[in-house]
Length: 299
Image: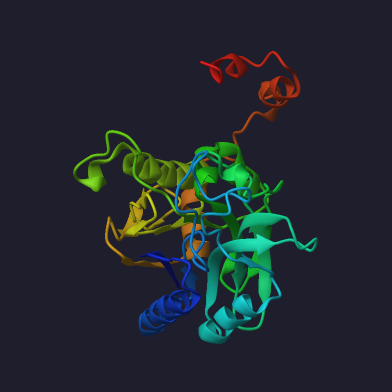
């Protein structure tokens, strides 16, 4: 059996506080025998304080951008010193080798190895004013299985998870700083339309691809953003095994990765029964200026 956990917690610009929060969840994870622990997007240094043209941007120096971190830098090494032999996924702002370009990034690592890293591909609501975008989805061999990484808005795009499933992902870690709706926010955030969508994407992507889906999310507030928590572990049948709901905390599930794959993929054939020959429109329209959604973007 493999024990998987997803964190809902609040992370800000205070790195020392972030390290303390990471250490606290690592201690909890060790006590519960967790093998793979997923932290939220921007767990090292916090996310943007707002989204849209008024958000944290490279041009808007009156606001505090997340600290830019190198994969081989002291911040990642500090996290590695905390986690020891525990395998984690964690989000941060990555500084590229040119010393200027910034990415919303995540890595899967333990105390001695970085098994892989990812740069967020899909950017919502002006996030591209603060970050450059990545361009691919890797799948990484780790001690807990083949792991793919996604960040937040990526989960709204089925193609992203499907690419990783076809490349052998058994577990997809989805790291988010997912807020409630900006307008007409529900009084009870669990009923908010953006909480609903967050949860729906998680279960749909797991079921679409018959993978274990581990969704971590920020909780509490930061700047103008109010996060919805709802960290969870979902099995390949789309069943939520555990969730934090709105609270900060840790969703934990014991799973049999190999056995569950054998059982569920033996009874569901979403990957086997694909018809790539019928999907040409996906690439054909993307390469033209006549795609029907282009007119909608200006509505």
